[in-house]
Length: 446
Image 1 (cartoon, one colour):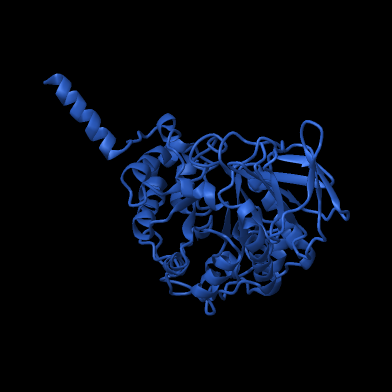
Image 2 (image 1 turned 180 degrees about the horizontal axis):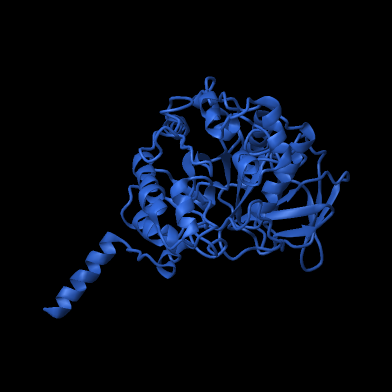
């Protein structure tokens, strides 16, 4: 009887799938849902009350009242009456031109396969009617709309994955500050605000991705991160599809969680041994919209493509940020960049989506080349025009059945093998592309 009971328990456990325990050893063993590695490219959207002053950065409130930066104090003194508080910006967050379908069209046209919206940044204002954020949310105040729901519906209509950014801490939340004063021995903020709100967010909007942030002042034991993640992976409505990052408490990043963000704009020099993501902003100075943004501070299309190609060759995902205006518009310069990426991906996307890093990630060929691969096909992406017809690659090992083409052009290219490894390719005149990047597809190489 004992043996049959044991076998029954085994089969029951396997039919229910793995159950994760609230500790890092167990949680870190969860395989990352496959969709995330396949999509490669996503859009990050930083939008909130900080989009109203739209000056300096999305850390406006902190620089003004926390760090007391002279430029922020001067900006307020010159432009707003005495006694004006940060919360007075919220009614000006009108979002009157916000058309979620227009945004989703632009994101889809960019070739991105997932979109991550700030549900709540460090200011604590939620872009949905959080019952834990009375009058400091987009339904009670400002737009009087559920922005998380409206954008989510439009994104999912286009079969894109929808993720939500969530800041664990809030700069000036008095309950959080009280816990902080106790050296995080008390957890009132976590128990009354941070965690109930996060559970509610997941149950209500069922995000495919949770981009956690604002964790670094306190350890994960303060945040109860492992308890939340065990519920997320075992019992939540998104347990089979949800992906998370690594910002779950002091010392967690680059070590625990789902994929690794490590630092903002993380730029590893060699192939990491864990799935990672680089978040980058089209406006190089800020994640939130700035009215004082200059063209010289905005990434141009070739820089974006070069960055994306490098990230994908090294096994990462590329999450590119745009900050909309407080009235709900995506600046034309951002839209132009996003549509430019999409035009390049229409031709070259097979070298990006669902690829794996190759045994060699890069080489200094005739011009620098980044490699990606799919089974016996290797893609050599170059981000500057060699200005000559012969193109030498040292890394690929060719065979008699090797075929070389330029993506976007159906005609096979003439090529000849070099010594024991490598080949020389006869390039056609390269078609003009504003992205300044082209891809050689090499079938049947090793």
